[in-house]
Length: 187
Image 1 (cartoon, helix red, strand yellow):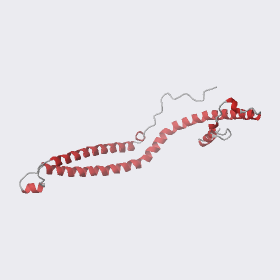
Image 2 (cartoon, one colour):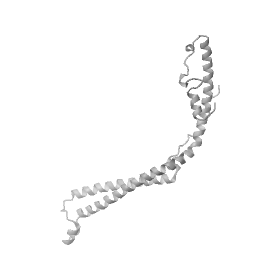
Image 3 (cartoon, rainbow, N blue to C red):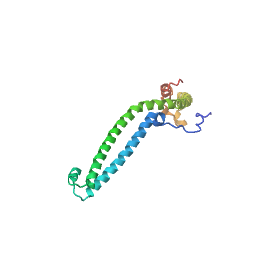
Image 4 (cartoon, rainbow, N blue to C red):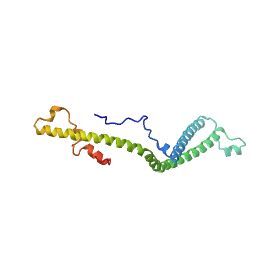
């Protein structure tokens, strides 16, 4: 009996990622990663400044009061100012990150369409190979079913011959035939 399967491809097929299919989508993912990385850095800086402020024993004097006294701003006041600026920057990054997430969702449809266009020929080829193999199986299934009906007609009983492929469904309209119809493969 001839092999039901064709020769396997020399190399496995690489399904491209959405980023590989669409440069815009890839750029948005890169920007998101960049924003996330900077947000992590800002969070670490924020925690460090909070620790520095909490551990600074000097009195809390606003820079404007220190200037009236003729003193320079204290380290604590300078750190508080840096912390406020850092929190503003962090907030801006969070807003930008939400905006980039929305842009990624918007760009995904086009990227998926491009991926489908690239993958479709390989999909069709493999589905065609499967349908051809299933058509052979369907023919063998019908032949075995015909033999089983003849055996049953002679009151011999098919249970003496081993397992029957009931998982394939009815030979006249079973699972294979339904799949072949759904796939658009004429039997």
